[in-house]
Image 1 (tube, rainbow, N blue to C red):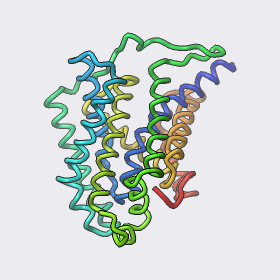
Image 2: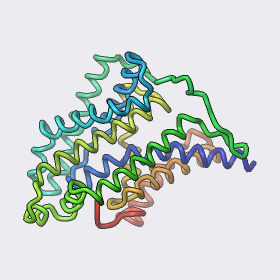
Image 3: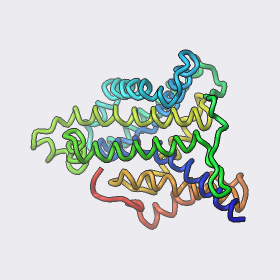
Image 4: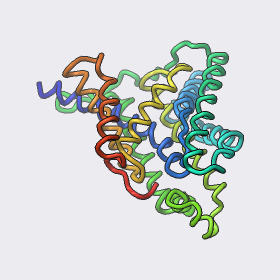
Length: 293
């Protein structure tokens, strides 16, 4: 009994860490640009395909392949912001959200269609030599791949937190998130901050996509489900806490795992929606929401 419950909790934590990582970029863009990029899941999908082809064509381990995936998705985000989302930030906050959702919806359809044309609709996943390897602790099995994913998620959170608090660009992003007009008066180039933020968000999506391709699978249609997961985590966490986003992802993962154990896997997806509605009704600012990005 103890081992079964412990295994479900551990599984939820490992999957939840990936949920939190997937939500980091979405939360960052919404917090700084006040833009809701509903094509975020498609960026995760692109990151997964990038990792898959780097592994299959060049034999580069997906975790080392992150050194290539991150700059690739950073550039994708750079181009998307320059070509599409830069026009949205000229509007007020309410109009930004509406127009960014329209752009994101169109971008979702385009990226899905392009992915189908390039790679077909088949499921793709990365199978490494250690894909089935696991560690055992007190009778609880820890898959090596997902354990590595947890470590990478922690490193991403720590790295982003240090970046936001210790570097000029990070502090400028925080200032812009709090009040872009005041930040502009202090000499901060708001447009550059928006561009850097969106590109960084895409890079984080690339990291998440790599872990998805290793732990699950990728196909052109996975974007919507991962966007929904990320949105649920952002609502649970609220804006203002980077570690809080990871913790909210873990909460969602454990909740899903517990529900699958107690009432069956068919109800697993309902847990996230239930938590989404409850938190949105009781605490709209989220569990860890604060004043900064």
